[in-house]
Amino acid sequence: MTDFLRLAEEIAREAGEMLLAKRPTMSREVETKSSPTDVVTALDKASEALIRERIAAARPGDRILGEEQGEAPGESDVRWIVDPIDGTVNFLYGLPDWAVSIAVEVAGEIVAGVVNVPARGEVYTAARGEGAFLGGERLHCNTGVPLEQALIGTGFGYAKARRQVQGEVVAKVLPRVRDIRRGGSCAIDICSVAAGRLDGYYERGVNKWDFAAAGLVATESGARIGGLHGAPISPEFALCAAPGLFEDLHDLLASLDPLRDA
Ligand code: IPD
Ligand code: CA
Ligand code: CA
Image (cartoon, rainbow, N blue to C red; front, side, top):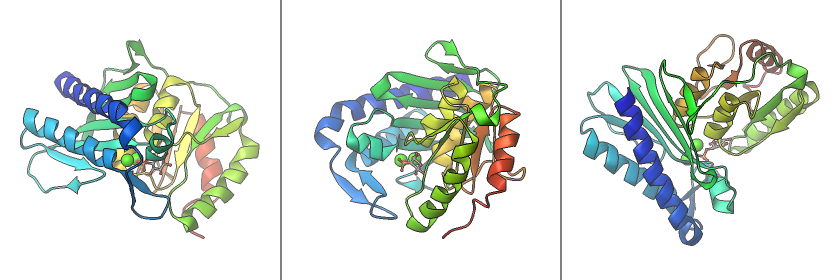
């Protein structure tokens, strides 16, 4: 596990350095994906290509799921789950909250996760059963926070029909909590729960590459992560908070029927 974590961290740091160096000149090379606001920069692709090359060189035969290139079929029970830039819109605008996210899954279980936030010089790491860290510091999520005092992160998808409902839901959450933050990177939002910078996080429609690494950082910090009605975290729904707040936030969100589209 430590070897997986060490390799994941080394690769996430290398990708982060490349992105920091090339962002000033190359970040405006943009194409769109699922909607006009869903962008991919040339550097998302370059970051994923670099990460794939390094994994393949060190661990030939492992499977890789990456946001930009998908997943090739393979036999190995080791799978690397990669978001080469989480928070591409922040990256594009020169805001600091974007991350390189790399998780290692063995036989269906995430065993190591790294979320590198290069523009802040921060690297979150976790290995299963061994705690979550930011730099050298062990992370513990906030506990005992009542819903009405909780600072909650969330995000919005790229499709209009989904966003409209997400706006309706957040309008009902806002008067029930301390405040809302929309940071722009699911991976950093979930790591922020681990670090006590947010009390909770929820979002509909995030993908495995968004939450795989950060999810382990969060659970290793003591947080609970899941979906609605006892489901595991999935692209359908992601929810993260310390036990207690998790259930209260869950019940509020479930009552708002958040899975519909406009
Ligand atoms: C996005 C970010 C954002 C979240 C979106 C994601 P991307 O990932 O994590 O915070 O709200 O749902 O798609 O497109 O920047 O990799
Ligand atoms: Ca992402
Ligand atoms: Ca991405």
